[in-house]
Image (cartoon, rainbow, N blue to C red; front, top):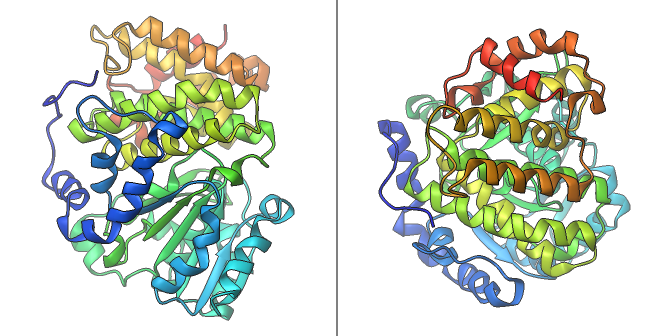
Length: 435
């Protein structure tokens, strides 16, 4: 049970961000979709939190959620409701091959909407992928952007949106800008995001993760304005479990591990608050229960529905909380050794949980009163995914640990870890992951 009233101290900007989640002016617009989400509880074993059920949590979000099997069929109608006439559809080659792009185009064309497709998004999207998408966008002159795919496609769509509307380069948008900086930005185009993996929860977030093509270092580029004010969160997120049954098992495993890591790290972050803790708990319950079933039977739509819900809730928790040292340690592994993000963060997560709990207090008590028990559950989930659990399995030599620790210490997420970490502490965590 997640306790109430134990929110951490909030900055004025943080409090303002939380107020955007509870803005009553948006409730009438999203009410119908969230009632539909509620109706799926029993059918898909979705969690209902003790102190705040999913309806309450989702009604507070400015992102309209359209959830359920076959929900992709509503794409054309939803875009027309947003007054779209020309849509840029951002996706990737795997989603094209699965037939999802063709189906999306069919639904858009049925509403008389003109479509330009950019299918050049790839895993860990870089500034080069965004630049290529920007070329397509400039020719198409869209009035709405649709991102269809995993977190990479959705983040690429966000990056294209930033540059198309405001110019410059991705590094100009790195970080979490204050309100006075956002006030000088032009509004972004409205977006509609459709995840085809249960992973990043990007469809619930006001950030895009884009890697610098020259250095491979990831940049978190943010715009916390509300969707109606032109921020990076979409107006609508379509969560259709039918889209997930076609994903390769390896991609599904990596994405699911990332979502699980989001639930765990947001639960312990120094920026957690009462609402984010409720989201983290609900996400963990959905994901930890459904993930083994989804790995055992990739065609199980019930499991993928729960995974989609959990990933979305974990993404929403990031929006109100933050991540920690597992993500700080994971990013250099991707940067230096090309390790898939889900593999990297999953491998580091048990060691980070142990390290943080050794500080004298269990920051993950909302998820499990015993931190070592939580570690055991995480490790069991990694086994279910067939994921590596020591660095040597992914080709990382011990001689690289000092450099990795120095890079991890520079990661933004390290500053929100519940136990203070510098290069020496992060080296200790990496060392634990060698055995």
